[in-house]
Image (cartoon, rainbow, N blue to C red; front, top):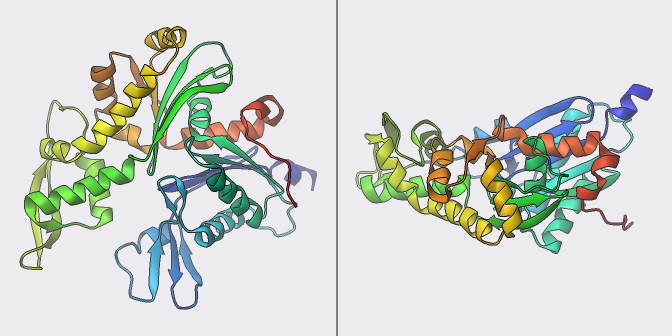
Length: 342
């Protein structure tokens, strides 16, 4: 039994778009979309994760596929708790497990009330102790930055619901900014733009696919184009249009500007010594948004700083939080803990 005890602590990157679970001694064992499909009449959960995501935009009246987190915070408490519980059970199939210690990542701009909701969800889902770690901190640790040294490290974590920009030194966040413009807004901008330019209605999933295949933040050497299917707003019938990646870049301009702006504002508020360090070391880009082509180029162009994309941007936060679980004692200082209430 002893070997089971060790493996039960876990870290959860509770993201707006995806939730990742890291188990001590095992690594990232689960990575699924943060989506819950519920029967609206009975309130029963029908599917969670990948299965539920396939249902988005395709459900009959009595079934709703919801994303319980909006802008990095809990929008639907019950659904979040159900989702967490489901994911934890996925990981710990056997019921006799002692309750795990859990590290949960939250955006840095989150209020005390929102933070309490996250903890509460963790306890309700069966945790023994819940610790909170701020996302940019976890992202920096996961990207392998030396967060405990006296040098400035800048991390830009573009997630689904929030973009977190932070300067970290000596194991703490010196300046940070959390803006609610991120991956989801890029998708929404594509939907709005296609409506305006082509009077074509797109679903969320199509928009996300367009972003991944065609999207870019900076002119590319070759600008591919693709056929996009949607519903014509005039005739109401399905129609296909051809869109190029340079057109799509115009669609993404506003949200991209907000993201770049957040980076500049943060640099602006950084103490000069640390700004000098960042000049040397550069900015590290993590999160799903780091995979948008040319975003690193764009930031380099606009800030004059070197920009590096983290090795596995989608799971930096989960690995960072996981490291907090592995080296619990050493990294205790980066966690926000409070005495157990009940």
